Length: 226
Length: 258
Image (tube, rainbow over all chains, first blue to last red; front, side):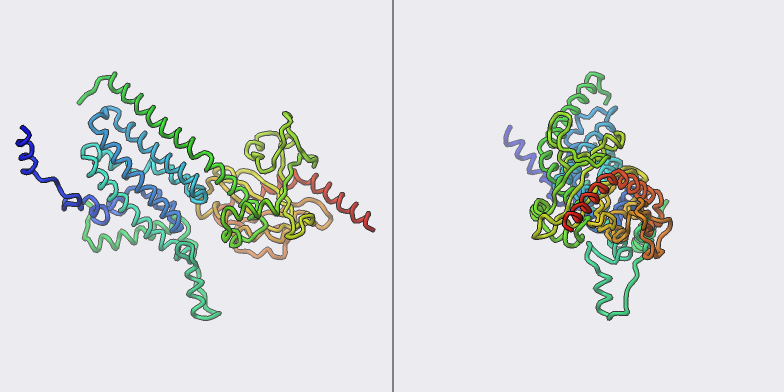
C-alpha cells in the first residue's frame, strides 16, 4: 500500500511555490487586471486617504494584511461555510480583521490611527476584499488564496501610493512630509518659489490623477472596455 | 450543497464566539498600551498650544511626558471660577482625566473646566501661559482644542485643534499648523474689556492682521469654521469667571507690592 501512494506522489510532482500559474496571481492584478484601474473598485478610499504618502502607506499595509488574512481564513473554512450565509461569514471575518488592525494602530501608531480610523473602518466595505473572497478564496486552496489576496492588495496599493505621491507633491509640495518644493526653491535663489496646487488636496485632485493613470495604463496595454 | 438549518445555526454560533473571543482578547491585551497612547496624545495637544509643532515633533514620547510634568500644572474650575478639588464621592479631580465629551452633555453650570498652567523654564512660580480646553461640534462630529492665553489673559499665545471626522483637505485642516498659527496674537476681549472672542471669517485668503478678533477662514469648510467659532465663543465665556478672579488676585498682589 505504502509504495503505491509514494508512486502516486512521484507521478504528480508538487507545484512549485512560485510556479507560472501562481506568479500570475500576483502579477495579474498589478496591471492587466488592476482592482482600481481596470475593475474600478475601491475608488472611495483611493480618493479619501491619498492626500499624503504616509497615511496612504499605512492604509496600503492595512489592506494587504486584511486581504491576505481574510483570503486565508475563508479559504481554510471554505468546505465548512454554509452557502446560504457565506456573505455574512465573509463580512464577519473581514470586519474582525479590520477591527484588529484598528486596535493595533490605536496602540502603536496613535497619530496614524487618528488620521486614518474612519478609512481603516471602511476597508470592511472595500469591494476588492469581498470580491476576492467571493470569487477566489471560497473555491481555492489556502496558499493560492494568500497569493491572490496579496496580488490584489498590491495592485490596489501601488495605485493609491502613486496617486498619493502626485497629490502630496503637487498639493503640499512635499513627499513623505519632506519639503521638496522648499528645497527646489532654495537651489534657484531667493526670488524663486514653486506654488502648491490646492486642487490636488481636495478629492477632485485624486480623480484627475487617477484618470491620468488609467489613461496612460490603457494606452500602454491597449485595454478596451467591452 | 444545501446545509440543514441546525448546521447553519451551529456554524454561526461557533464563528461568533471565536471572533468575539479573538476581538475581546486583543482589546484586553492592548487596552493599557492604548491608554498610554491616548494620554501621551492629550499631553501633546496641550503642549502644542504653547510649543512649536517642530519642537514637539523632535521630542520623544518620554521626553514629552517629562517636559509636561516639569512645566505644566493643572486645576479644574467650575463655571463660577471656583477651583474644584474633590468630586461628590471625595475622589480628587484631575484635570487630565476630565472627559470633555461627557461634560458637554451636562448643563454648563455642572461641567468641570480644566485649566493647564504653563510655567516658565527655571522659574516654576512664574506663569508663561494659561491653557484652557474647548469642545464643540464640527460638520460631521465632535471637534476640540486647547487654547493658550498669555499672562494678560487676553492675548492668544497659541491653539491646537482636533477633530474626529471632519472632511480631509477641508474641515480637517483645523489640525494644520498653518491654520492654527493664524490665531496667534489675537485677543478675546475688546479694548474696554468686554468679551468678544475670535472668529474665523467666511472665505479664505484675506488679510485680517489689523483686526484683533478676526481670523482668516477655511475655504470650503464654513460649517467647520463656524463650529470652531461657536466652540471658542462658548468655552471662553465659561472660563471668564475664573479669568476675572485670576486678574483680581493679580492686581491685589500688585497693590500689595506697592
